[in-house]
Length: 244
Image (cartoon, rainbow, N blue to C red; front, side):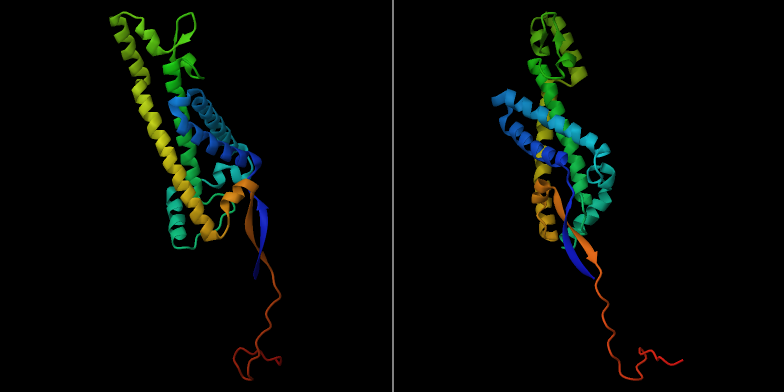
């Protein structure tokens, strides 16, 4: 049997565009923070929107995009990594088991990072999609909880602070959660890049280019002519007599 290498379309446009949008938006948000709050916030919205669409697409999209076709157990992911380290990983048309597990972890981490950022934005600025839930309505509009509490008497202010802390965990709590998740996501991105490089080298295929073009190489078996039977000396046990 010989192998013929053919290009196969694997990643649909939504997967590819969403992938690179998240890359740009995440690093934009990571390196702007408070200095460019508006840009930081909108980058977070892009991340949240793309992740939400990707999760939906994981149930209704084409086969290679669906979670059921690439999400495997941690045990299978570790088995794949062992084979990758040994230099003989099996080939997968879509995500390999380790890559599939990484996709799920990054989606959850990105969602948590964007969500905690929206909570902080609502508490501090009284803005964003969560503001109606987390800000105080004074009749003149939504204002941050911290600003509303500043106008209360000391006793009422303390009572409101305890209530807010009990409900939300406090502003400092969410800032710490947001920072931890952002750094955890960055660590996942670094591991993901290292895994892509290792898999590309092991499979001799540019996986980064595949996420741009949407196409990957697939190994297709092609039948060949049977090899003629080697001549054997007379009397050899493998030689079949034509006589009954």
